[in-house]
Image (cartoon, rainbow, N blue to C red; front, side, top):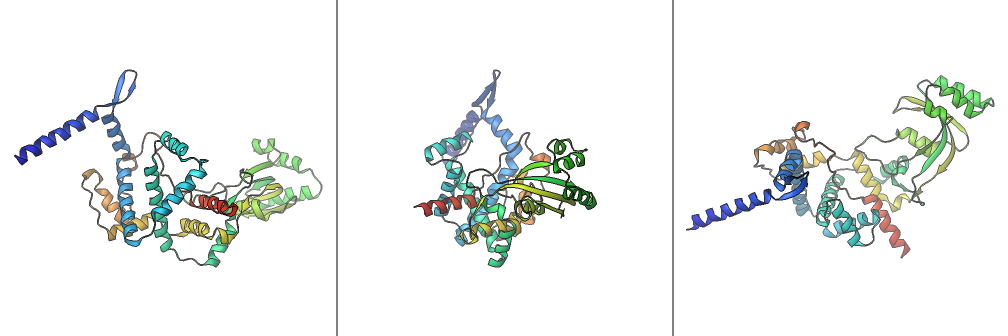
Length: 349
């Protein structure tokens, strides 16, 4: 009797799943797209990536349960910071905004918790003293800047660039002899229509945050030169921009400087940025956790993930998981900016 009941239950589950898979999710030109079509396509393009994230997420949760790294209170605080950073004070409006993005509060909280635990594990393995952090802050202050006007910091300047230093020495000599800098730039940039049209004058937006996983928008040497080193209304250079193997000569006309909090007030955010740049990569953390907590993937299609996570070697071929359009990115909590907002609110009270 028990076997018969089990068979009936299994048939009911299969029939319900079958009915659900045939449920229309969209209709295009009279042609029905079913939930089954949607589910199959999502699994085809995102199945391995989703399975990888789920395994990594569970590893982080197990580590957090064992080491007590992140509390629910911390996650909720980051959630509120994230909400304010997106311009919302009313949570109901924010939840409506999330719904339009195909997200839920629970999903966002899980993403935030994931990132916080991972960062705590990376921090534990990164040895750094205050002196090193202060030097990092001094060299990368723009990463922690925020303009009081709500506009990004900019530098307006005349900019000459060349592979050869001698070219810029000639330019500098002409200007110092009294030649109009605009005329010199017009003649210098005969092969660069854009800079020739502006007579060498450019306005450059300085990045507020630098993503360590992407190439910086400007070479760091040039960034520091424009933002700090070059004096106002004076020719400065030629200076070698080593990252680009390029010489530059500049005359800074105007700086819209951002607001920068003192190091002691944002020390934790400086440390977070340092860890992102120089701490162990996430793959190393997951490799370590995979040795501590056993991973067993039952679905043969994703069995390779066991070895991939343990060895940090990407075994999956790109063609098997690249979607036809841009894939959704994982939401990351803006710990640095959110924390500063929270500090300002407390100081105003």
